[in-house]
Amino acid sequence: MKTRNLALLSAALLTLAPLAAQAQTTLRVGLAEDPDMLDPTRARTFVGRIVFSALCDKLIDVDEKLSYVPQLATGYEWSADGKTLTMKLRTDVTFHDGEKFDAAAVKFNIERHKTLQGSNRSGELRPVDSVDVVDPTTVRFNLSAPFSPLLAALADRAGMMVSPKAAKDNANFANAPVCSGPFKFVERVAQDRIVFEKYANYWNKANIHFDRVVYTPIPDATVRLANLRSGQLDYIERVASSDVAKLATESRFKVSKITEIGYQGITINIAKSDKAQANPLGKDNRVREAFELSLDREGIVQVVMDGEALAGNQWVPPTSTYYSKGSPMPKRDVAKAKELLKQAGVPNPSFTLMTPTTSDAQKIAQVVQAMAKEAGFDVKIASTEFATSLNLADKGDFDAYVLAWSGRADPDGNVYSFLACKQPLNYSGYCKPEVDALLNEARSKQAPADRMKAYEQVAKFAQTDNPILYLYHRNWLWAYNAKLTGVREIPDGLLRLTGLKMN
Image 1: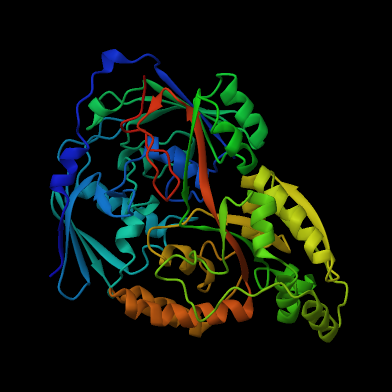
Image 2: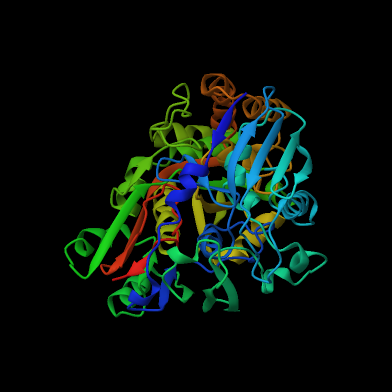
């Protein structure tokens, strides 16, 4: 039986700090995009996860080493067969509407994640057959088969708890979300601001040092930085890599960085919709292979990220223990790319590359356009507001899509929902039963070596079929007022509000 007790770690999160010493009561955060809906069951954007860190506590969290640490759960225990997970819960938690958090609330949330129409968590929790309320402070997850990524899912949106009273039969929940995090919802103005205020009855309120937090979406990295320098913002995420060196010399600011656990890539519509058949990339894998061979990943890293990224060709970085060395990164080969296009009968294929309006995504599109042109590709760029681009991807209304994934603590979170048949985030429409079988095999194993045997085969399929061209793994780059302390460098790229203070 595998047991993990988080109670001792929980005590570390309760360090007392006086609120009276606050020099500033509002924390102002600049985001690179406007999040989509503020409902953890249906949300899917990275910036949404940053916002949720203030709004919705999870059952467990991850630390700087991606170890699991307590949040709403204080400990967990696996059964010997790996098919049952039992969690002990905090007893001092309430939701923002005053309703008590308990095992019944966990059961409601997991079932909501699994069954709500439009849920993006259903795939993450598919092996969970049922949830038992053992007692008010104990909940048991019953699985159809061993499922090693479950803890990682519960350390993310699948583990976020919303108020059952507020969410039940409420189609408007995302517009007025009610969770149990350190801050509660006040207002949202699309493309302008999201405002939260401190929840007075938060279980760890002694470690929250701001009365309000305001998130402002500013897609242009230059404008975000200008707002930081002018004092309109206290913290900005995804600083332009070209600004890092200069910022590091300015004593009024601090810069933090850590390599992400996700990736930056290009998703190709190969079977998501009928549009795939009109897409030269979609209907012939030789064209996709030629497209990949037209690209120089190391060159993209230098031009787009000023070296602040690690080139890669898989859903995990080459430094990961789950990287398959048997499927190495291909080198650029324009001559071979042209030959493949000739064989496919399309020497000058034309397609549209959809890209969010963020600075990095725009740069990627422009560099890819220039590189691919040398092989004969005519790449048109369609710049689209981020949430809108996701909706178009959902419908299959695109040819290729510059899309970043922020990553998960378990490799399954970087690959299953994107490559398994008919999963919520499978924007390419890729579907192969043999790949599904391998992904499910990797999910059922606990030992990394056993899981790698399956992932090595998945990597070979992915490199052959090219539904997603993985390009690189970014350094998360943050800049903030030097007076702001308590910023933690965690590879998931999220800003934790606990412990932050302005000195």
